Length: 93
Image (cartoon, rainbow, N blue to C red; front, top):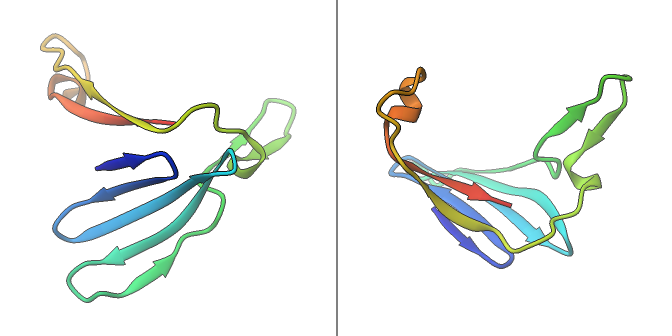
């Protein structure tokens, strides 16, 4: 996991994904199959929000207000969700 002022990257032994955070916008870049080297271009919109009135707002319409950062998530032993019982990391944009 890497967060620098203009790019986010999540990587493991099998795949690597990266997103751009430039000009105040979060956009998809690429997904790489690390075993074969095959690269897939990601769509520019990372997500869309469907509002109650039916309006759809894409991620490219939103503004990033600060540089991306990585935060540590502590384990919560009494959490109902198993995923929250294990320490981890999150990317904040």
